[in-house]
Length: 135
Image (cartoon, rainbow, N blue to C red; front, top):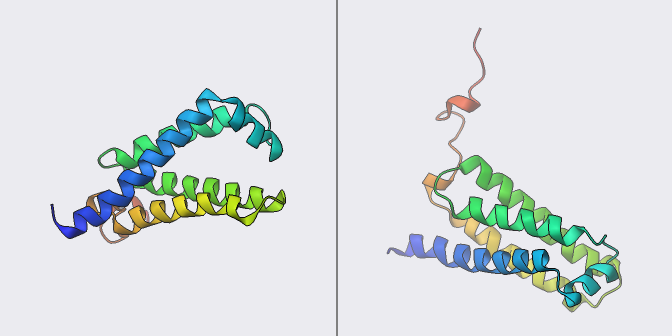
């Protein structure tokens, strides 16, 4: 495996593992997680919603192909993780509580930046779906 491939798969695997664990915890809804969610003023149903989307996003990121869905998954993770960080800050939690989501986001964005061409959207010259309609 070459360095470029490793540069993609290391952050991707770490990010996928973290988001899978987080998504699974959201779906299991342990009391500790529910207490954090309540402290952040999220509704009781929110962990199930969030966990489902996290697991779906991980599946898309790891699946071959699907470049447009990978872009959407990355955008969703970016919104989710920056929102988690902001929720802690706006709630008055210590800054240390806002850092872990941003570290995870860093891994996710490193994965996105290092993705191989097969996992990228084609440029507008190479993608029929992005060419303007003629006629």
